[in-house]
Length: 165
Ligand SMILES: [Zn+2]
Image 1 (cartoon, rainbow, N blue to C red):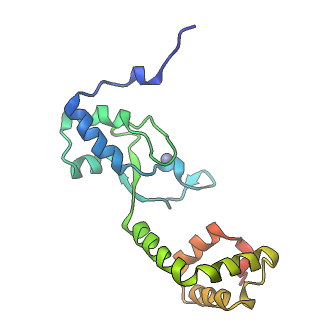
Image 2 (cartoon, rainbow, N blue to C red):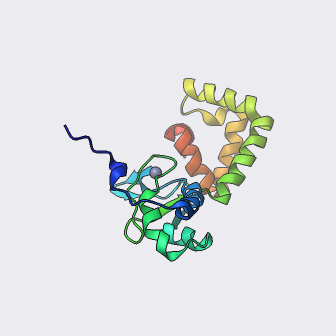
Image 3 (tube, rainbow, N blue to C red):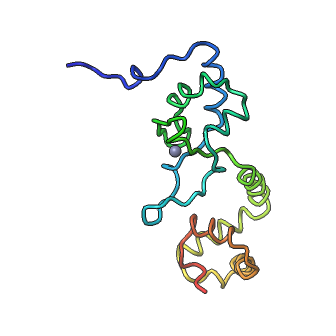
């Protein structure tokens, strides 16, 4: 049996190209495969949508290395590969909004951690009775204020029917 290692088909990167490759790879946190799908179309949620070409430009990657480097890239989140310089080049960078959200959630965890746990176990028992708790009502107010992004994230991590309007 002939064993085929997919890496055998990848172009070789010289030392300089390797250095650029590492920098570019660090920026590729997500890809279209990572995104949730809705009827065949993906909805971009994870990371900031960009292209390899834009990352190459930001990092001043020399023209001659770009095609080969693209072939070596794998998605940090899901491991997808087979990127191509012009055709299959949409990727997601860690976005500032996510970083801010992470920082905020650490603060929120400190401030509300216990209450969120309580709300969570309340919802486990009574999935549609979020509004009978103080924190539930607070979140509901955010929804009424039109904080839709918040609502979207919330729906992804909790039960859809907790805040039936
Ligand atoms: Zn991915």
